[in-house]
Image (cartoon, rainbow, N blue to C red; front, side, top):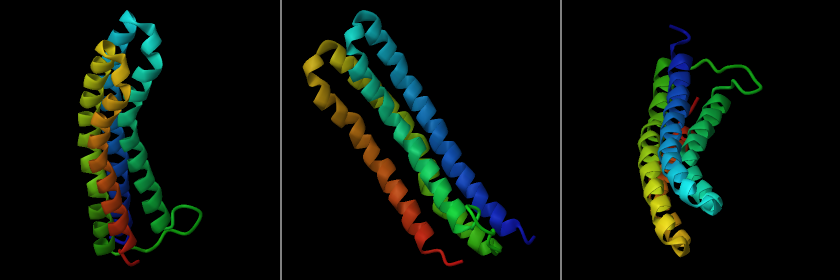
Length: 158
């Protein structure tokens, strides 16, 4: 029972990193499928397609950031692990959920939007700036979830 708090905290960190990473991988895959189709017709659109395909990868970075924040908070980065109560571990677990859930789903949604934007630039190459805005709107909610998790983690007293 003495490790239950630490286990819950690490479980939350694992979900934040894992679910956000899975969402990013799926989102990038969706956008990549579309990019491959467009580049098979016009290889000169590689840079534009790559920029749009990369957008869903940011959610994975947000999840990884929360992993580092949790590992630092519980003392596993360069120090002695804190003796957490189960309640403290549960609070950290809960603080990881916004990034885990929102980044998982938003990365997939952003991948779909990026795929549509890639199709847009295949027909209208001058619409690249406009096509970047559409998936960036999805990103807003991933950023909000990151901020929510960071704020929650900041106010948990150990």
